[in-house]
Amino acid sequence: MLLGHETTEDVRASAEALAQMGPAVRRLLAEVVEHQGCNRTSISKSAQALEDAGFVFIRESGLLSVERVRITPSLAGEEALAYFQDVLTGGKQ
Image (tube, rainbow, N blue to C red):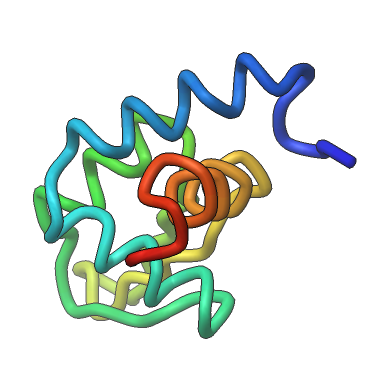
């Protein structure tokens, strides 16, 4: 059952886009999905790439400046990662 994508083809396209982003981006997404979020002090290029692709949500907090960044997974990100790990890599990741 898909919640973040309409079709299996959409999930496959997202997983292929994730594969092209590189290992650092995939590691960050895996961490965010595993823990259902993570905190950082700044937005990395990897986090920004994931947000641009719709795989995570980034929230900044702080009084006068950004003191904390909270990264949480989207359903599309969870589905893309699962498809990448289970289908595209054959469960070897």
